[in-house]
Structure formats: C-alpha cells, structure tokens
Image (cartoon, rainbow, N blue to C red; front, top):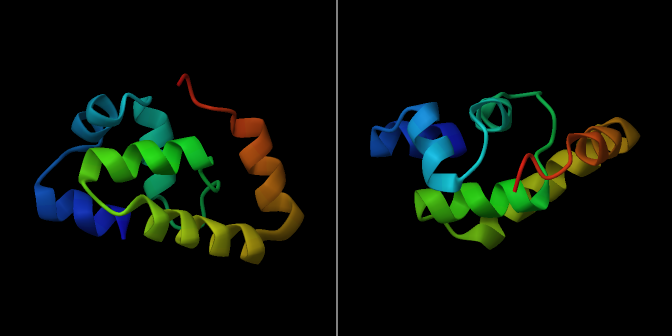
Length: 84
C-alpha cells in the first residue's frame, strides 16, 4: 500500500523521507516487503506525509506484527523512533 501510494504521487523515497521527517533508510525499510515492521510513529508520519488514513496503515502494521510474532516485536523495539 505505501509503495503504491508513493508511486501514485510520483515521489522518491528521499522526498517522502523529507515530507515525513524520517530518515531515508527508515522509509526504505518501511516499503520493503518482509522487512522490519515500522514503529507506530513511523507509520503515522508516513501516512500523514502521503495523505493516507493513519488508522488503515496502523491496522496493516498490526497484521504484520501478528504474522511476525516475537521476531517482529523485537525488530520494532530495536528500531526505535528513527530520529523523530
């Protein structure tokens, strides 16, 4: 969903990172299927920057957490707030 919206808006990862006030690596990882599950703050910042409903993206994040189990939770904890 995030990658689709990024393409639809014609933005680069760098441009989205600036809009969301996140690091480029954080945004890149958030767009990677099977990558680390982004923090709630990261998802909220990306949703706001893309003009998407935050709740919908947070629901997707919750599904990724459940699928990833303890490993996903560990990735979220270790990823921090990514400089927010």
